[in-house]
Length: 499
Image (cartoon, rainbow, N blue to C red):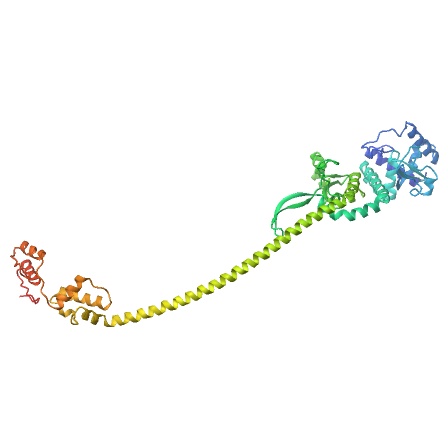
């Protein structure tokens, strides 16, 4: 063993001691947290056979040293038991023991290992790929720093390698058929494997419709009438099929958000290393987890569809004519509904147009009627105004003529009251205000100078003042006597003069 190889192996021993691992990692169950010491002194026929045969092929005859000569090359082949390995394995492995680990155990996963001392190539199964082999491959072939090698890193490498090879084999077996069927049914799947969401008002159908949301989880059980398949496109490669992941920056382990939430707080959030400030060194705070949003579609997470998806795709494809017919009927119903709504709206617009035209016609008639009525009103008003003007102009003359009176003035009054009365009557006559019969009678008596007999009220008032009225006296005479009785120092004559 060269000094360089010895240094590399010593470095790997340090890695193994740091992560608590021994020689081999049990990857049949993918990876265990800490490997027991079974490979120091292996037991069991297959484990003993592995030890003996690898030692025989190594330069060293000591198993403890011989096992350190081997490393994984990174080449992995998946060959199902029922398939021939002739078209998969390189010739060197076809000539040895296809479908068998070097220990003799039947295998489907073929991990290639290399003896770095004599360049011998061999095949082991997933149960016998050793920690040393994978660690050396990561350090020497993939240039991963030694302090980054952890049990988890090896688990990730094995998982990714297995996934990649499984996908490669699956696509070789079913890829062409899958692609053909998937491309044919993807659009129909996105319309068929849906669930009803909230309702909304559809302007095209003029009714409430349900939102169609992708069905992300199956409902019911396969074979039952109420079974509802989850969307094939969603599971395989839909761009919105994403999830939140947390990656441990130390180990490289990636977990889902739901798993991350269940971690202890000390492990979930941050770890911190503090050094006393007086030492002149600063404290350091490092994030333990990095958060990312990544695709959870099977195309990205697995690289090939799982059995459930593959079976659902086949079943959906076989029922594709029925799904197409259902969508055609659905589309036909919607098209008929849309056509009905369009026709109804056109008929409604036509009715509205006719109504608008009829309204406009009626409104034109009403406008013409209003115009004619206004013209007639103005004509009649003009006649009334002219008649009123004429009446105003001849009102006093017509009044006097009607009542056989001379044209009088307020001077026709014998006293102040009569003058004021005549003045008021003249004003009312000239403004065409009607006079009561009593007012007309008073005007006639004043203008015609007709004496009126004293009223009983005047006669009673004279007697109350101590006078002796003449029953034959006139209203003017009674008024004069009342004035004399109320003011004996003055004597008022009928013409209004005082003594």
